[in-house]
Image (tube, rainbow, N blue to C red; front, side):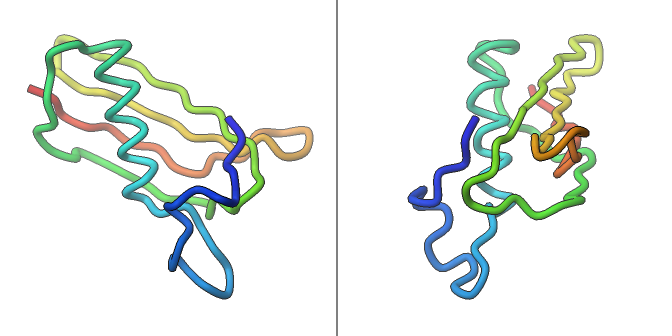
Length: 97
C-alpha cells in the first residue's frame, strides 16, 4: 500500500518531518486482522511491539498478518518496500479475546 502524504495521520505528527504514528499502524493491523483472520474478536492487550524504522509519506508498505488461534495472538510485520531489500518498519503481536 502507498502511504499517501495527504493521510490525516500525518497532520501534526511531526511538522518538520511527518512520520506515520504507531497508533495508525496498530489501527490498520486491528482493522484488517479482525476483518480477515479473526472475525468477532476484540482487542485485549499489546503483547509485544517494536518500531524499527520511521514510515515516511510516499513510501510503499507491505503488511503481513498471521493469526495464532491457539494463543489468540494476531502477529504483524510492516515492511517498507524501498530498494532491493524490504526494510522492517515495525512488528509485534496483539492479544485478542
